[in-house]
Image 1: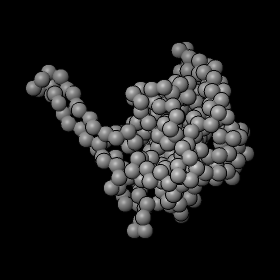
Image 2: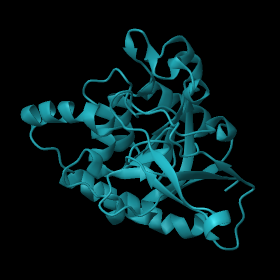
Image 3: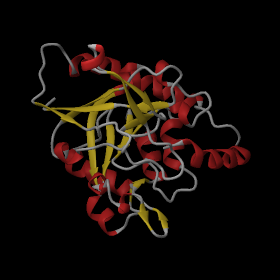
Length: 278
């Protein structure tokens, strides 16, 4: 999710509700979740354990990545050195934090929320839960993940595990390169999480974050960004523009978020991996 569209909404919401912050309740809850994650991490990724497979859930970072039209400046890359002329190959990149497959950290919306370099590493891995709304999204670009969807998943698979990343699969990645990725003549349209679903996840389950295969965890038509406020306000993270979720739909997988430790970052491009069979 990116700055200029959000800025006006945040400004108006702050006027009405005051400056958002991580509540003491949510801060303590975040601490307990991450402590649990720390205890879990060694058993999930031990040196003597091997995943059956590794699925890359990331799009290649490129100046061609779709971005909010007229809002986010596409990245740029230039060759600085070449093997032929300089004996080494190197590029210079310029990009905004929120493009390509990327993560949002609490500080993206929350004034006192943890930034990338201060965020506990234990919160960057956990079990994958994929919620498939692709059939509904095919019929309605404004579809969203509901509490019913989450409870239906649990009816089939058991309770969403502690420290999970709950990921929406809408099929939107297959629209990249077409106008329908953004919407239609009436404006921006793509799926996301409902505020109620986000609220249920943080109040009823102990997750590490949520992710989507679209540009934002909120639907494009959202004017209040409730999913962002709820997830980030609880000290958790968001992953946006995820790829290849079909490949882990019916697998037991562990999400590993490989993101540079951006100094004072609000988020940034990331390499998201799913270790299957773990």
